[in-house]
Length: 248
Ligand SMILES: [Zn+2]
Image (cartoon, rainbow, N blue to C red; front, side, top):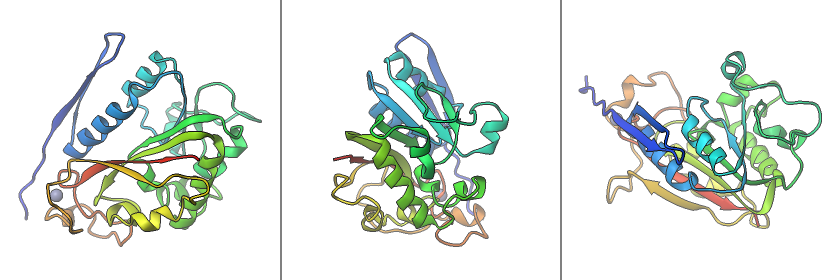
């Protein structure tokens, strides 16, 4: 058996009101949260939708609220509904910030078109195709269809000039786009009359590393998983990236 390689590190930030947030995290989560904090914690006066947050990740949400942003979130996680972290969306359109139980394929049911300045997500985008389908009735079950529909919905509720920005693990787990770096295939979900070309900001990729291959720890993680939902690299051996597109 390969030796356990567990690198625990601490994510620590200070909010502008003086509060501090600190948590022991895996190396992948540290990369993920650092990317998210660097890119988003200084946004001001924006209407922001976060897709699939973990509600324990309060530091970013709280900082955005301190920055006079309107923070909205949606999740399809039934456990978040049970914990009362989210509520069922109201009848008609949502007009004030809150955390709601719904999915990406029905955003226009809940929000006016051109409502948001930015749609963000942390380690959520790689799961749009499969985890959500199990949780929400009528959700597109096929992975690629879930991306096509979800991204089209995002393009409608974003303002022109707004940004769709998703932080994801690379060569790790989830949909094949991110596990195998299939960026041209992913781009097919972003028609060029609606979206700019994808920008990618990587963090933690070993220098000169180009091949796509499993790390030596992965057989103990998902022994039964079949592509595209297997784990290629464990959370200590993968790296992360911010993917961003502008609504044109
Ligand atoms: Zn590994």
